[in-house]
Length: 124
Image 1 (cartoon, helix red, strand yellow):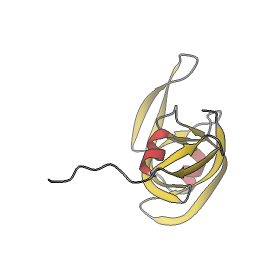
Image 2 (spheres, rainbow, N blue to C red):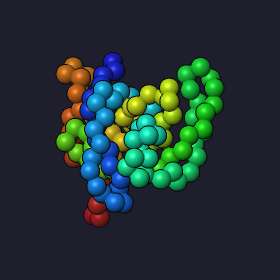
Image 3 (cartoon, rainbow, N blue to C red):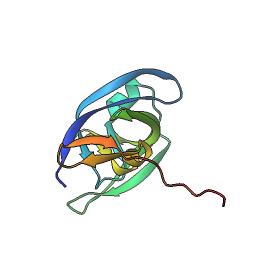
Image 4 (cartoon, one colour):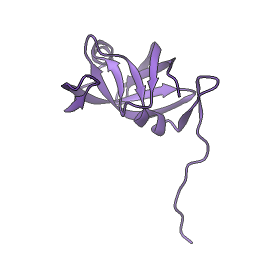
């Protein structure tokens, strides 16, 4: 599909406050979670809620903190789990956020676009 970068914004979901823009964030559907630099999340007052283990491409296991934040991209915003990225980690927008934002990737234009109506079960 090809990778591309976009600007996303993040803010503390409890206190609201101002948004923090993260230009050149990698859009990565191969990553489950969105990774935001720890320094950004701490400045916004986002608190770690738990630790999560991850397997990286070279086979190593790493552990990172996870917290809750509001994420905005492609004209949508939604609360989501975010990984506290450490120095050397990439900033990226993952699949969980894309689904929560109801966005998909346009591989030709290399941009985020609305995913359309959400499938729902209704009573007959």
